[in-house]
Length: 399
Image (tube, rainbow, N blue to C red; front, side, top):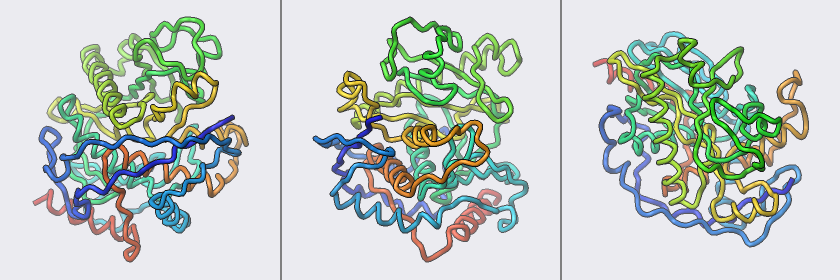
């Protein structure tokens, strides 16, 4: 399958003072972040490569850009030092139990949840690899989008004391993921193209016409909610959600409106940056005050699919996969080399794929936020740094 990656002129450095992220940053989800974080200049356009190249197996195009070369060198030197596991409950006195998710390690901090975004890479409901700096990218990308979407919905964020950590309000999480889609695509069992290609024409309450082809734009965005069963996603209709008592009708109506509004806003912002927000998933919960909050992550390359807008139409017309800035090419590599759903042992992802994915995640962050990704220092072990920052933040919150 043919793939290509754009040659990019990386955004110019913006004086965003990200060094301050090592200090506790406190904000209520109803209020705005400090102006030094929220003010951004106009986003640069993306310059496309004039050459397309087959990726076998799905490896990056050569890029002579100095910035990418510098970042890739840092990435390759960090592959053996990823943040794959944390044990803060053993090093931070204020923390109690730990829950290990696919990507996040979640700790009970009394009135708060401490969520550490690791470098673990998941797909097909399994851990596939560890990607350098992925946790930092996801955490900082989410923070940017949480701030930008507060006019649509409040979020549960209370503090971001570390590059990889978010402290959030405790919420009663709705057992439904709100997946919004704008295109017929995907390779997992619950992806729209997978089920459509099998003949499904009514999916999660949405009627799909005959004749659609892979990667085609839908006439309108659709909501395809899923719920969890035995650690995998199960599509569900709105009527089933209410009938099974997963949510009340009023809560479902409110959350579905928020999800569709978030996605439409995200699509507009992404297009302003030369990107297409293809699909994404949202999670919501209800706080002790009865208010519904956006939780977990928002519009990250883990929870979302992004394509390069400039080349989409050409790729689509020629039957090629769109140029992407997400983990789809890694999914495709595993599907080409094993059965990721059934094989007990999976092959190791090639180092060049791991490095390429790390670069794409960083590129997405820089494109969306119009700022350079700040590489973490290496003098202090990452687990020591996180423990120190979380301990300080919790002490300040408890005063």
